[in-house]
Length: 313
Image (cartoon, rainbow, N blue to C red; front, side):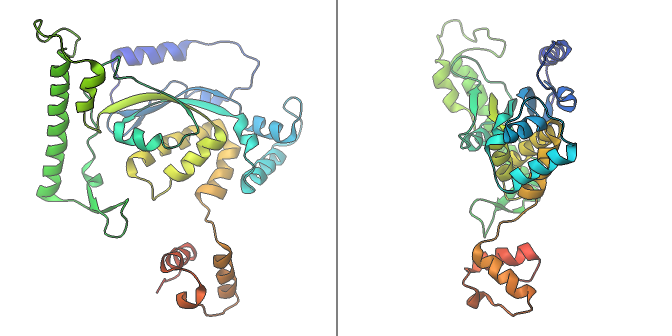
């Protein structure tokens, strides 16, 4: 990802500005403010603003004055208790705002999380950049034979090369037609002074879904962690998972105690149904249990066996 000189100048100016405050700040996140964390080929994530820290979570849970005098290990223990028992409101006391540049097809998947404030770059008023997401060769995969939402084996050789050529060709051709319909060159000058050109809000419909858009996305920590628990998961689509990974780094810098609890109780944890727990207890007692007698579907049985590292057969 390459930033333009103007973009880098804007970031440098934002990072150079300082102001006095009485509110809590987090030095590790302050050092990341406004910086563009590269994602995919042209995308990025930037932290624009935030409110609260680990102490704000603890303070809200205790409804106390000030930052308190309890030891750090007590605060850590409380945060882990809150995370373990899914108490949400203390985590809602922290908020963060991101500037994200992402492919349109990922933005449409992302927007399904309806628990944030979003303001997207408008192609009704502005012209989108000539930037398209082209997957790396190792991300070109066939449709999975067992998962309708997932990928299977990676494409190779001539087939992979043909797909990449088609992606580039379609995106480039459609963008050229987009500019032609607008009757605007990339510098904004008229292509043909004798034509009016199509309105921007109509011309944009010709763009491919791998074109990049941008938005500001503001949410509280509770809903951010819900987003990350789904989108940082190994089953999530690779492209949105790449953004989730970058955002996890910012959460770790911002609220390290909450991040550790989230990693242990959400990212690295599994959920067992009452039936699954009963089966695990039987197995620990040395009893033999089969899928047919378990009361679980074949899929549930397979998932349980994967969780505990046993052969599903």
